[in-house]
Image (cartoon, rainbow, N blue to C red; front, side, top):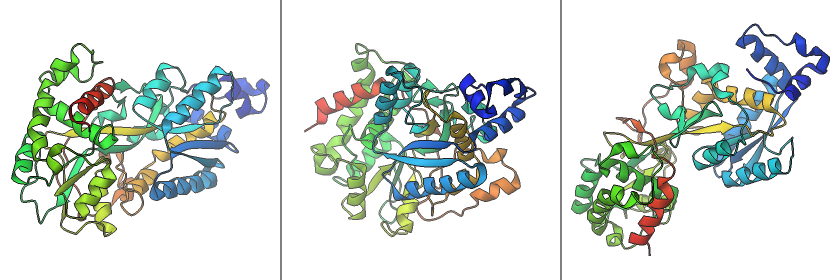
Length: 399
């Protein structure tokens, strides 16, 4: 475990005590870090658009205060990009103790902070609870939108493109893009997806890209603008064959995933999509969708990613932030987060790495709306594909 000199001084209370800091192994270092974190306030900048998520963070704050004497303050934000801008401005201004200590982050925001050296660490791989992370079965816990995490962010939860609909009206769920074209032809006007740049709409287009591109080896690499048209030609051939059979003949698209869900609930569409595999079950439990709801993923896999927490380089509570990140990886915290009645956010942990007692935190039964046959999670294409895809889609199909 690496500490800044400032952190060590805070931990010991005086610079003269620095030589007493244990050097006999990681466990001893962690004990010292936990001691250092006592009394710290950690400002956790996290999206606040969901009451279940806000409630979960409130529970986390209660736990870390009782167990570690850490005050966790939820700084409620609408867009992580605003935190990136704030940290960037603070660092440029030479502000050594910034306003953010922990950030809920992934994707382009992580890439930007990593490139600009705005992140503390590496720290994630040295957290004691990192040993539980499923780095083999869930490789996106180590790679964020084709960018190696390098220990600069700690995995928190999983997401994967998932489709769902009323099983009483769908005899065979389409489990590939080619099958979706056939399904849409058989059910004209009953299928759609959100218009990019809506996140879910862009994800749908990326999934179609991954299933149609000729050279899969291009996906994890930065795409060059001159090679982009040729690479995506099969994608737009696929979309051209799909769109005439969509809702309103593909001349209009829902503007958000929320609208798509409502159209499904109203019976206007036969299926919808989500990036949380547990959302369909949550919608059934809340009474928004019928008990006959089914959820599925494409048999060869669908786009998945991991969301993370990271520590800005100018955090004034790096010890406390690491202790909180470690708690978020605990089987207890991960099990509670995965509970459909609490949040329903899939875990980043490997069940095979848990003891029998630790596994009890994840004991849940299959419920209506659950994904019954999970497919592999496919890593996101390199982030450079996104703006080009969105621009090309809008030029071809935007209204």
